[in-house]
Image (cartoon, rainbow, N blue to C red; front, side, top):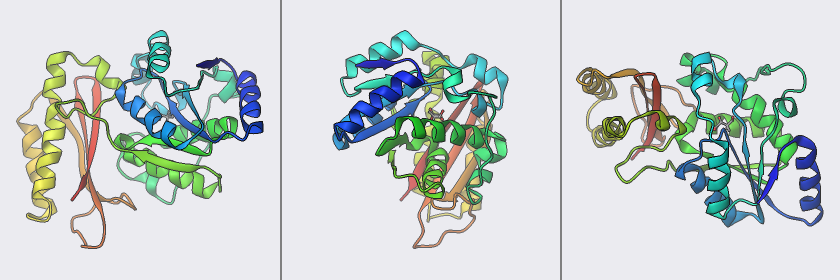
Length: 282
Ligand code: PAF
């Protein structure tokens, strides 16, 4: 596996691959790699000649300095994990100047309102930061296909919109949430949970399963009420939000239409760890 430590090395590498006509699949990450990331690489490997990943903890997408400071940084472990998985041909590890040559600032984007829902209300500026780094990485890596996890479903929708608005010749793929055998959605932030807390955190997935059972049987306001009650009985968990939203517009709904798809979104603060999960509703 090639380790590309700056923009110039990356550009030379990409030029060589493009000359050989290679189809490039790309999965950007912020490191602290887990099996969820490996599922992105597997999907990329199946559809491309070459798989590139990147590791860059992007400061502009953190609206909380504490969260940025505490974000796990495990570069040696990550490189080993990438090498062992065997699906990744090159990893790009840019320096801050490779992404932000002047100021470490986000650009401002209009995603037709997708950015104002859910995470947009709780993490102002977050999606501007994500879109800024993803646009820059796309420009540098020039992939044919790019892969993002459905765990950050709103991020995935926004990146699809980014590619559409900027008319980028990149096909954006969503990859299903990767869960451990008990149902916990894998996340780099889980690193900060003890094994006991990881068991407690299963309440997120268990709640989403119940929501899926209740969906179309009881009303959405009644479901919302029941979810609030579940978390009221779990004092270590602070429910930040629970929303059932239209999968296309991401707008919260109190009422469903038969021909539209819906998804339940759940965000919980567990101590100082913010856990997020979601589920498509059948
Ligand atoms: O999902 C992530 O890990 C990040 O938001 C991304 C897409 C790599 C941008 O920094």
